[in-house]
Image (cartoon, rainbow over all chains, first blue to last red; front, side, top):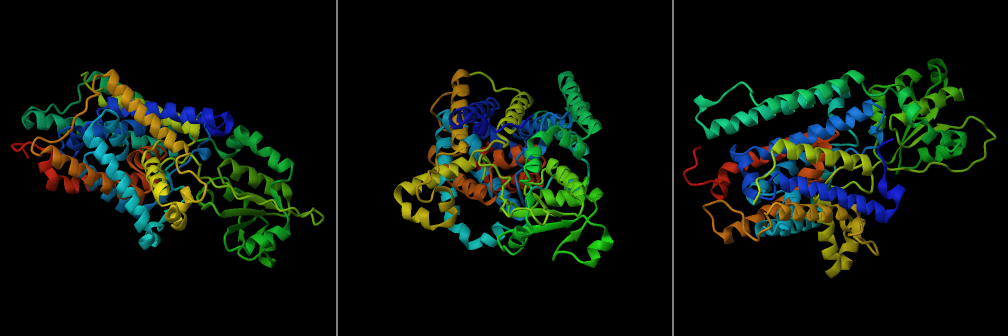
Length: 365
Length: 174
């Protein structure tokens, strides 16, 4: 099942070769689109040549449909795909700065690389500039690190924000892309000819067929739906089952207390006992939840989005209930997840190991 | 010199490459992270103690750590090679300066460095470049990547009018 981690499974050398091959494809597609030519990129901002928008959104929508369709088919585990964390306002401010740099310099980092590779001297100059700019940032970030680290969400998806299903969001992205392609074509046409000669009905048969195909795949993704927690557990259970059978996933009450008092960690305690028993006495900061709340929904979304120092502990008198909850949450991508041990005679061995979801191969960080 | 590919075709190829990146490495594509690593490695070469003292730099290249021993740098080398190969096969491998019709070569180089510096600064600010944030994050529906993407376009369109002399012919119909 995808994704694989080539560096972990093939070793560093072979893994690096795969990265190099992916880079080859990346660089070649940028060059083939004409992104090594600053005039072609800049023309986007004067509405003359919309290649940037067309190529970028095609790439996004194609990759998006491939990812979520293969997830719907049970071929890919989306929980293990790294999602860029959201830093809302720093991203917006940085984006505005980059937009200005883009139109002044004519490239973005990736395209300047391709431009430099094809011996364009302005591309080399731009690339040199990005090194200087990145350096200036490293020297100045300490002055506004609070803002730079603000409005953070670990794994917030457009679908969570809209309250739509993944399938509906993918379809929405496809529709948005098709609308933008239409607008881009007509804008170019209107600037090429006079406005009276623009043919408003789309007529290119190949484009119509490709658009219909894309929409059909998006609708198929929607119709199939993403696998529910039980289906995900069926697909992934074999990976995580050993943690249960070896009792790696169970923590001793002493370790729980130690973790609860560790200021470097963020502990989330979910108490699965019946409400009456919970109210009669429970652990500090524990939250009373029922098993059904852990099937899907806003609580699970918030657990998946915990920062990397977040640890989730499940408490229940009935171990079967706790194990069920553990399986559902694990299958949905909750990373640091443990069950509080009920057996008073269990040996005390510390087990909590923090795992960060951020991959070392997170490329643009 | 052969013509460029149809933008949708090139985009489809790029989308498939992006999907393979996710499927094989769990992460997407990018360039600015590696560019920053090269910058830090350069600094480390000349001022190692400075790198060890500044937290943001030490995390990447403090002490014995090498900033360049990272998959993103390998990806960057691949991207460079891919661009080179494609330009060569299509007869576009030529030393030249790409610029608008109204500026001199010297002005173009000056604005390329200036724009690059602004871009490099912004890319660190936004934690990713157009490819890493917008493309990769956009494909996996990260909310921050989508807001980022629209703000890059907004920034470009906001400034474009004021720097039109850099790109547009004098009689451009506006």
